Length: 134
Image (spheres, rainbow, N blue to C red):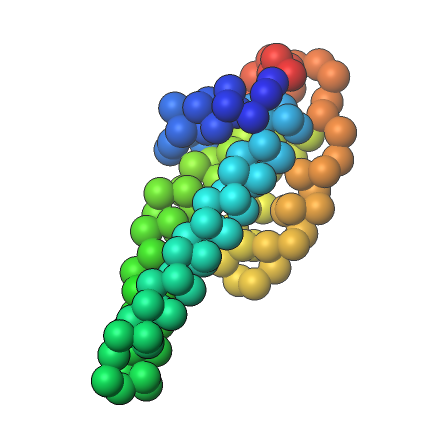
């Protein structure tokens, strides 16, 4: 599975926490989320710099830039975060683990399911479905 196919698949399965996701599908989508976050961060820095350059009060421009940062971060968290959690749950299912491990992301232990997602897939059907096409 390539980058574009993985991104398309994850957005098609936006709220689908059932089934299985291949290693490639999950990690390509993680890369997509990272790239989107970097682009938004760069745009926020540029907007804050422009606001500071044209503003009479630099501290007010910085505060406005921080507000813009939070707005963009919230949009990214909703648009890209939800399908990432769904893909992570499906990836855990692919290894024979419960998707409930994803809840550790909400109590600052998100590294645990992320490391678990690096483990190999089960090479046969399990209780969450047949082996995904790589």
